[in-house]
Image 1 (cartoon, rainbow, N blue to C red):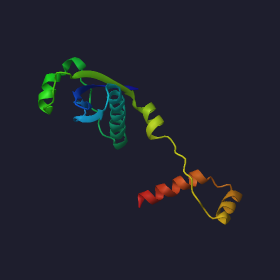
Image 2 (tube, rainbow, N blue to C red):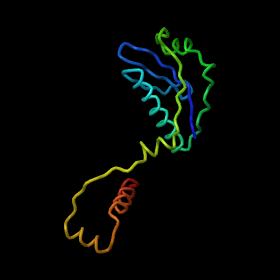
Image 3 (cartoon, one colour):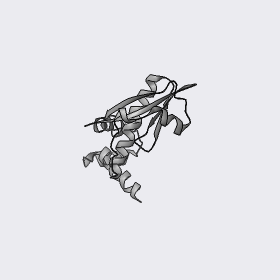
Image 4 (cartoon, one colour):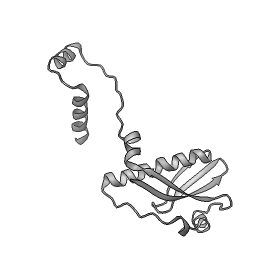
Length: 139
């Protein structure tokens, strides 16, 4: 499902600040306009993903036309002359699968005798390590 939220972009001396007024003033930054857009997508996806994981209510997005860049600029004490509003959209579930939930390869060392014994019993090393780490993290 596509999530769409208006974001305010403020040109600064060394890049762009991005603020999501509907999301508790969630903010990010990029050195270029393109990087700021990419960071806005990542920031939005991460925030909405965290809310969902925590079981928190996801705020309703404002209509872009209902946001006053001048009013927000005053609240943030930011220069509105080069500011603009853009709607940022992201499929949070798809983004999470690609960026937050993907597996990472780990290399580890175990004694040869332990490797042989585990292989003989057809133990899945990845599954066993994941289970052990989850147990350890709960302590």
